[in-house]
Image (cartoon, rainbow over all chains, first blue to last red; front, side, top):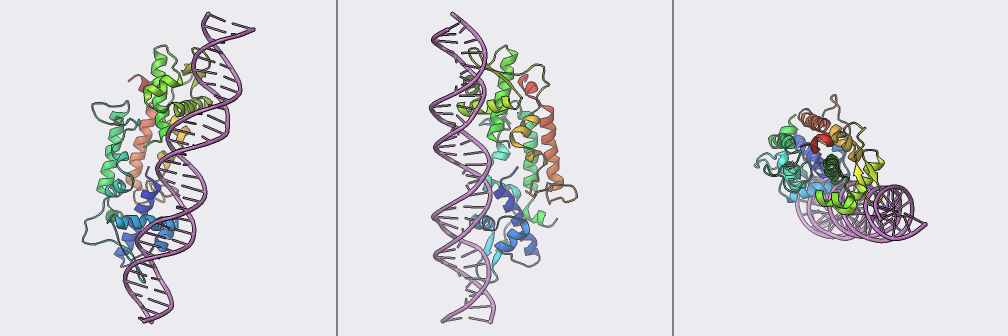
Length: 133
Length: 133
DNA sequence: TTATAAAAAGACTAGAAGGTCTTTTAGTAT
DNA sequence: ATACTAAAAGACCTTCTAGTCTTTTTATAA
Ligand code: FES
Ligand code: FES
């Protein structure tokens, strides 16, 4: 469903948030180990997320990753849009290059119902709401 | 949602079926043109489908692709399973390597509802049912 | 003020997906 | 029989995703 990058980002961010709640600021090694993702790749993905402003980090001893508490919660949808674009939320199930109600493919009516459910799910859940589960 | 291969296969097969109904047996060039897919790639994909037994073909003058009328209708699900496996129908939305009800990820309960809807859709629709639309 | 710890940056590699092209094989029509 | 036509086979190429690793920068603790 999602790309590896999105999956690791999701799992990593949720782990960071659960640790932040406990007062910790985990680093790349710990995060990668806990979410069972490749170490260096996880680091790279987290760096991108920091650059995109979704996350904050601190270098040096006692450093690690954490969320800015002043920022609003991060929806899964925002994360997906940033990592893999909107194809999964607006694309055609048949692969036609423009999915619109006036030029529907033979799967359109049924497919958009699923797409809308995906949209609802990723819009309603946030990293913070998942971390609390 | 689906891979390019699945998309082209879907569109190609539906086109072949609509032409079969009209008494025609389209060839690779015509099919690729009509479904707006790369010519040689479409040919390769159709060849695979013939080898897998989903489709029949005839070489030489007047040749082309057609469905065996004795065979039962081909569900989209069978096609997907053959071209890209069952990841989309059994995999975890979080990317965990085993999705089971007793080891659910934080998205499991909501995600499996969507997965089931996808399963229902691809199980109920066939190349033949789509061709008739 | 130095040693150490940790993220940032970015080059590099591997593998899979997507796509192209040429040659071979097998039909069909004449 | 022969010429033609169209699929089959398979080598090859390109692009993207996924993943690795080294070097650099920056912070902290002692
Ligand atoms: S046109 Fe295909 S899903 Fe909308
Ligand atoms: S364990 Fe993640 S969807 Fe089932």
